[in-house]
Length: 114
Image 1: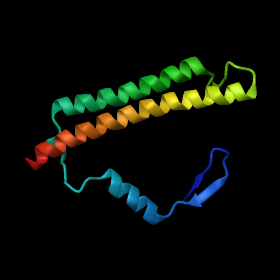
Image 2 (image 1 turned 60 degrees about the vertical axis):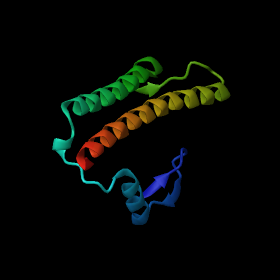
Image 3 (image 1 turned 180 degrees about the vertical axis):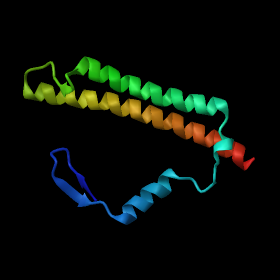
Image 4 (image 1 turned 120 degrees about the vertical axis):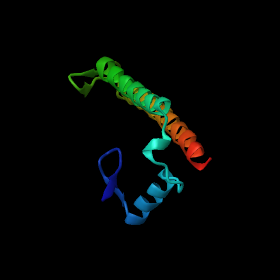
């Protein structure tokens, strides 16, 4: 497996060690089972993902034409800036969803460890 840069060029190959390090970062060592999550946790998880998808849908609705991104400015530098703003909006929405999911997991893990 390998990663690509924004231009589609191959960057450094993704190694199994890198994948293990990412999994270790994402998975806490405390085992948490499904029963640990409260109905409120499950609802908060669904709400978080729904909110993320709503942001993505709004971006698609307002910023694309039949699925293809259309920048309002005609100058290339302005289009680049517009693209950066679009990606920043999506990045913030994704980060917010990740924070919410981590908070849900943390609450469940605290209940599990208690």
